[in-house]
Every structure is written in structure tokens, then in C-alpha cells.
Image 1 (cartoon, helix red, strand yellow):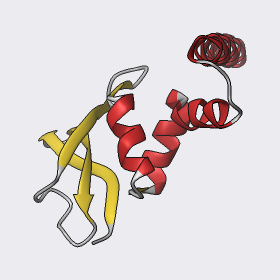
Image 2 (cartoon, one colour):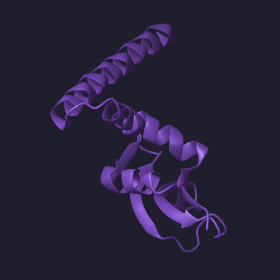
Image 3 (tube, one colour):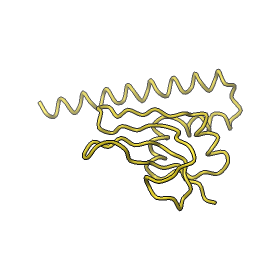
Image 4 (cartoon, helix red, strand yellow):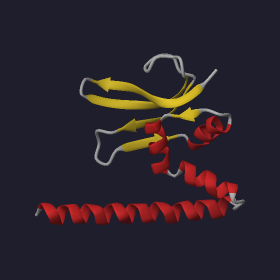
Amino acid sequence: MAVKIRLSRMGKKKQPIYKIVVADARSPRDGKYIEAVGIYNPIKNPAIINIKEDRIDYWLGVGAQPTDTVRSILRGQGVFYRKELEKKGLSNEAVNEELAKWRQAKEAKAVTVKKKKNKKSA
């Protein structure tokens, strides 16, 4: 059985909210799933993403394949970066420190991009 980590659409018409779910690859998009591991709301600015990192790590560890969209969401949240740091043999404290630095750098970059965008529009 091929297991995928993918999005399942919820919400009203023209106002989507997505559940990040673990499901059999053969099941339909909004059909039966094994476990819900997060929520993604692209309508809000910035987008709201809540994931259960421990469950995502478990499912990736047992061979579940994320779809392209979910892979980019997880990459943006630092899930794959955490796995890379853990493979290097760093302690949990060191991994958490590196992730905090990475998130601060990512936030700072987003702020500078937003400032540049505002200057161009003005």
C-alpha cells in the first residue's frame, strides 16, 4: 500500500482550508484518510500552517511520500532541515538552536522582501 502525505480540501466555496493528511494513494482527494497531521490556510496573509512535526517525522520515517505542495510546505516549516541536522548527529538542543537561527533568518528575509515590494509600489 502506497501512503501519501497530501492536502484534503475543506471550507466554503472560494475560501479553501486544507487538512494535511496521511492517506492511501488510491483514495480520493477528500476521501478516507489514515491520520490528519496538520492544517494549511492559504487565505490568511501570511498563510497559517499548523503541523504535528512528530507525526510527520513518523510517517516520513515509515516511507510515506509527500506530494509536491506538501513537500514545499514542510520545507518552509523546517521539517526537512531538522531531519538533516539530526542525521549529522547533533543533540536535540543544538538542533533546536540551529532551527531557531534558521527561522529568524527566514523571517528577516521576508521582512526585507516586503520592504522592497513596498518601495517599488510607492
